[in-house]
Amino acid sequence: MPREKKIEKKAVKTKTKAVKAIAKPAKAEKTEKAEKVVKAVKSTVEPVKVDQPKVIAKTKKKPVKPSGFKGDTGSVDFQIDNFSKKIASLAKHLKIHPHDFDSRRGLLIMVGKRRRLLNYVKKSEPEKYETLAKSLKLKK
Image 1 (spheres, rainbow, N blue to C red):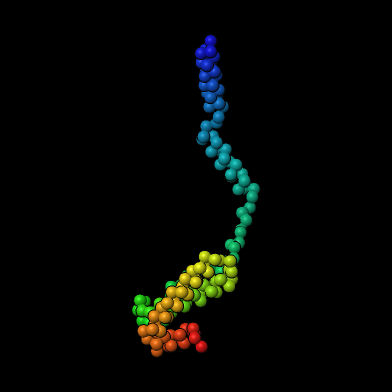
Image 2: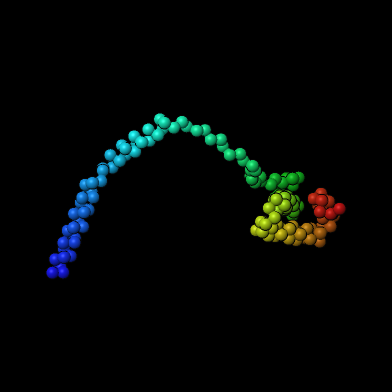
């Protein structure tokens, strides 16, 4: 007996699936109905023009160009100048965003690198160090 009940239950399930499949409208009918609804809505509703949001600040990074170093990007002078420009821009950013700790860490790393380069120039060429420090306004 229990086996016969299982077979009957399966038959009932398959019948209900067949009935559901017949009761469902075809996909073509659905799309036709949807198109009619869309047309009706478009005809009753006027299009609304939405103003574009205003851009408050554009953050485009400009490439650092060598200033007076004639494209010799590997020279110590250029590297120090480059670090100084990046440090200045990051310091400006951190004044606006004081809780940006990742940028603060990057700033400190750059300051350390610039300091090491300046120490190297100071040991190897003291006159050059003085002119660099004055031109970058690192010393008074």
